[in-house]
Image (cartoon, helix red, strand yellow):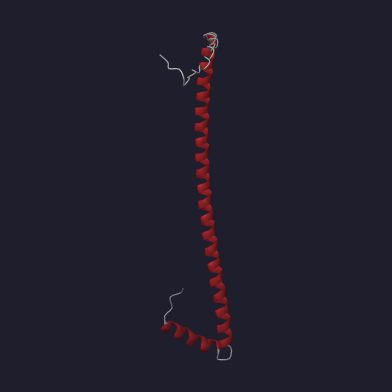
Length: 128
């Protein structure tokens, strides 16, 4: 995180030992470790929050684009529907102005069905 090498770490420990003293150095090191851990968790939480906000912003942009496209499609469908409705009304008016259509022809009367004829064949008399 801080890119500190071993020699730099030893120098910091030596200065800490001289300034703080050997009795208080372990307690100060433990406190510094806890604070460093808290700092790392805080930075991690902030990164996570920023990442979630960026994803949320991307989703909001995507939602806005989809809503715009839906409005565009709806507008095109409504426009086409009005055009078709207008054409249909014009053809209805033209048909009404042309007058009534010729009356339908009367239904044709079906000729009576012929009765089936059954020929009698007799075995005794030859037919000529």
